[in-house]
Image (cartoon, rainbow, N blue to C red):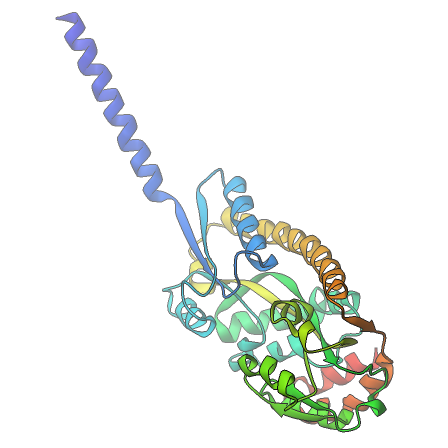
Length: 325
């Protein structure tokens, strides 16, 4: 009889533990983080790192599920979902200018002279103002930022100075700012879908294109272009963000953990980014491409008026100040 009572007590204790565990699991927070990059991209690796750090900082109370390759939705769909409270997190940048005009500052041609200059802006008072406007107008909250590889001009002849462009036929994205800047620099910009660029270079419809090194490599432009002219005409950053609606449901302790995890993910991504950029240079050189140092100051000076003519009035004074630094 005594053994039966002990067995019942053991079973009841086990049941209570199970119920408590289930209750604790139900109280856990799971953040879904969707983005457009693939699993090899530094942004994805940093997103995974963010999840690992946040889980550790909260003793497992908050977990992050990362969905690469737009598998949770396209960028604009996720932003809209975050505003409605149906999505939690994404990685986004100048697309936010649809709500917050200052977000256009994330990718202005020749506004940032170096990675260090860009960092000083992104982490300084201008960056604070950009983030505050995004929170207020877009209702999503930046918690970290990642650098993007600068855009460079590829061609089949070296170009060191804008005077050497001489009507060079080049593909540009269908962005008025980009088109006008390259016209001012002296080339013949042709808006074209990215999917058409390789064939157009191959058959001579265009002579050049501009993109970050990662895309130059992944698109195999080395097969149809000989030179990477280091124009570095657009330096930019992008934010890791969380829905403001989701943010407001978190305790102060959990908010602090999210920001700390974001800080660690940002530092981790920067390490990966710098290594990645060096390896891309080595790989493209190995594939036969030659890197050309250009007169960056001459390019920036010639592009300035076209940039200022195309930026929104809300940020024009800031851009003028950046050019003057």
